[in-house]
Amino acid sequence: MKKIKGLCVLDVDGTLIEEEVIDLLGKEADCEKEVAQLTIHAMRGELDFEESLRKRVSLLEGLSLDVFERLYSQIHLSKNAKHFIKFLQEHDIEVGLVSGGFTTIVERLATELGIKLIAANRLEAKDGLLTGKLEGEIITREVKEETLIRWVKELDLPIEKTIAIGDGANDLAMLQRAGLGVAFCAKEYLKNKIPHHIDERDFAKVMELIDFP
Image (cartoon, rainbow, N blue to C red):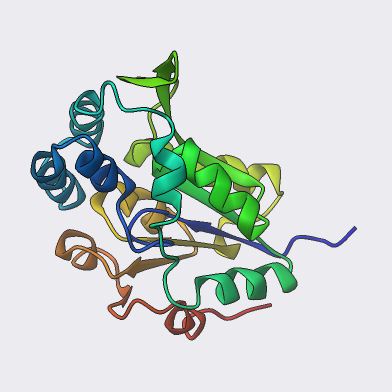
C-alpha cells in the first residue's frame, strides 16, 4: 500500500467546475436572477452563507430530481482539472472535494474522477421532488475548515502537506489553514486575504505553485 504524501482539497462550484449548480437549479425553477444575486453576495462574503443557501434552496421547492441528469450534462470541468487531479493521484497526493453545493452532483463528479473524500450539502426530497429544505450538516466556511483538519488526521499528515483551492468567501478558512491556499478565479474578498491566487481558469497554473514531493 502506497503511503499518502499529501492532501489537496478542492471546492467544486466555481472552482473544479465552471458553473454554480445552485444557479442552474434556479434557472430550472424560474427564479434564476434571485438565486444568482444571492449566490454573488454570499461568495463575496456579504451574506451569511448558511442563511443565503437555505433561502436559495427554498426557492427550488417542487423541482423534480430528474433535473440533475439534465444539469450534469451542462457542467464543465475547469481547464486541465482532470489532468491536475490525475497528476496528484499519481504522486500519492489524496484529493478531496468539499462543497457548498450538493451531493447529487458532487458524488457523481467524484466517481468520474476517482475521488473518495467528499463533503457536500444534501437536498431533501420527497416523492421525487425537492422539498426546498436541506438535510444534515450544512457545509459552511467553518465546516470546510473542520473537514480539511479531519481528513488530515485520518490520513496521518502534517497540515503543511496540504493544499486547498477555492473561489469564494466560504473557502477562506480552509485556504488559510492549509499548507498552501490558492484562490482560484476568486472573488476580490478572497484574493485580498490569500497571497496565492490564479486568475486564469486553468489548473496547469496551479501546478506551477506546488512543490510536489
